[in-house]
Length: 614
Ligand code: F6R
Picture (cartoon, rainbow, N blue to C red):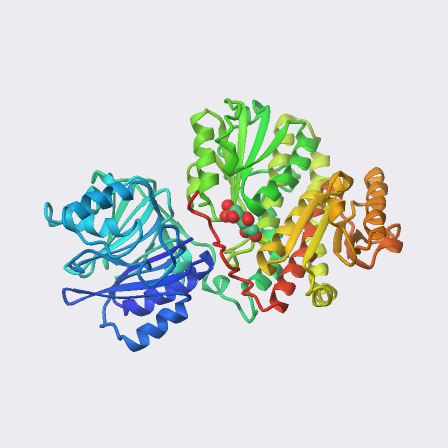
């Protein structure tokens, strides 16, 4: 949600900021804007809609040359997504320009106060108050960073702010509380961005910013303090992917590219996690073996697709460790007074590492003394920073709003966690763990086969493009796969889609089954005999009521074929690992159907890549 860019250096700031905003488009937005410092003046332009609209404005209203600038893509919270509410926002004199991500919770009080003091507000946003506050503070101090710090001390809520002052060329100031902001270190130039993709084409050297910190960048310096001006220790890091990873590379959609990258994402997430003798080693596991041995309850907290990865994990973790594992939507978790103590391990799953509900859930868990481990794809993001331990997934940057490779990598990381706990607790023998790891290492080849056979799924999507409703059924680990299949279709194709545990069918959902409704069914591997028989009955039940059945079933299993209108073959894998293959055709189906319907596959309507407000 909201993309932020700041730049000072030797290049044309307009180009750097616009390029950064384009790379941040994936976060989701509904307007864009830019401000440049030139000759003691602030020049700005903003426009509702896609960045192409802003570019059109810039083509008409030429901004002066400048090497200091800030930019923003806005995902509306306070105020409609129109030109007026687009960022940057300026103070009355047009001297201070502010862009913001987050929600300033006390903005109404501040706005009243500022209006009473004679300031005129031009927008309905919470952000605009900051420009006026900073301007007022500049009456008390000549230093922009001091003024920003003083303003930040008055703000409540979540905010990343990036601020420029017309009278301070070569300086941009950023601040962060709860929302993401990273610094890019260049040679004679420095950058600020909501994430590293904002500046990855110029530098791969980055600095994490902590909670309640203010950063001041000039072409030759980066100074970080807390909100009171005390210097703080920062953590520099090197980004291990390059600009090509954040580009489409010949694909029509990032999502297609990311679906195709899944064999690599799974392989990379497994890479280097075990010794030649088969013993698991998790380098980022900052919890000691003793602490892990004490764990007697696991609660997974996450949102959306990441929560479905958690649902898959529950089956594997409980089976392998015998530790009770609950899965909870992060947005519900802290409001229900969960029972937590030192021996509870809260596992936060988040691709972006910035999802506000998940972040607030782990903060709550830590206050209650639980230990927190995060599974995350984004180095330097807030959730792993605030966790006791982290397992990074190595999926590479995920740009499409709909998570694909992020999901598979999360599931793999959860399996690694389950096996690691089983190893520490001595519940599984080393050879048992090694056998599961060996099966996991074969998964990339299985995914690749499904990708190679993707055309049949694409053909099916074309045939079903007129569907108004699609159902997904699964049992055991196939159930979260069904939920994920339905979510993908909903968010991309805007079609009503629901996933059910197949056993629930007769308790209600079967009422919606009627003539021609497509029903996808994930059939458990034959090794799970009991489940297999039951799901065969479920397929017959929906078919008898006119459903068109699309059955995902492993190679060699022909029992369901007589009841299937369409069969999608899956490679044979152990039952608990089946989600890693069964999800792939459902991703391809949703992506293709959305494309057939002419939707923007990478940026579905109303959605943002990382949801940084509650
Ligand atoms: C769906 C999707 C979302 C995210 C959810 C959590 O395709 O991408 O449901 O999974 O917003 O995001 P992260 O994993 O960044 O916390």
